[in-house]
Amino acid sequence: MHVVSLNVGKIETFLWEGRPIRTGFRKHPTEGRVALVGVNLRGDDQADRSVHGGRRKAVYVYPSEHYRFWREELELPSLEWGAFGENLTTVGWLESTAHIGDVVRIGNAKLEVTQPRSPCYKMNATFGRADMIERFNRSGRSGFYLAPIEEGDIGRGDPVELISRTVQSPSIVEVLAKVASRGSAPGDTEN
Image 1 (cartoon, one colour):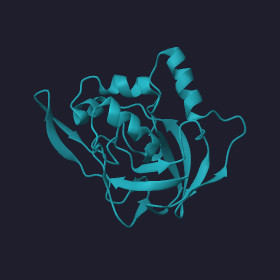
Image 2 (cartoon, rainbow, N blue to C red; image 1 turned 90 degrees about the vertical axis):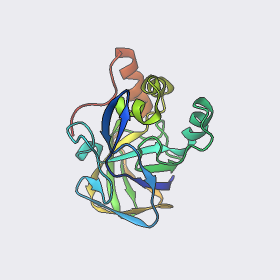
Image 3 (cartoon, rainbow, N blue to C red; image 1 turned 30 degrees about the vertical axis):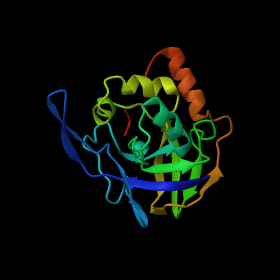
């Protein structure tokens, strides 16, 4: 398991369905190492911190293995890392292998897996598709959030080292299955 791309983004405004959308969804690969300070990666931002970012959703991980599916599904052969708003595009770290409460070291930062992602309307706006959230949720390819435990810096190529796992903690896939059986969104509102 390792980081194949580290992605950050600034807040931007664009029009969607005739109204301005202010968002930090669009992330772009960056070179070098980036500091995780407080609840954010340096150079990254979120437009609405009441529901995005914060301690429990400080860093968003999305597996690179999902990109092949999306490139075909959306007919976007040039879909680049960071397209799903993720901070870390990884390889070998999937929703089936990440468990709630897992503590990992990436670079010299220490983080905890907290929850799957539940996207808001800004995903539809960014992709220019009214059905993107529905497709995303239906796919089971949610990615997941990390909470910082120790600040540090992270870079492309850094291994993801599992430090500890809570006994009986559910995987992200198991959380998604439970949520689907209840018919609710996978994310909580705690920041």
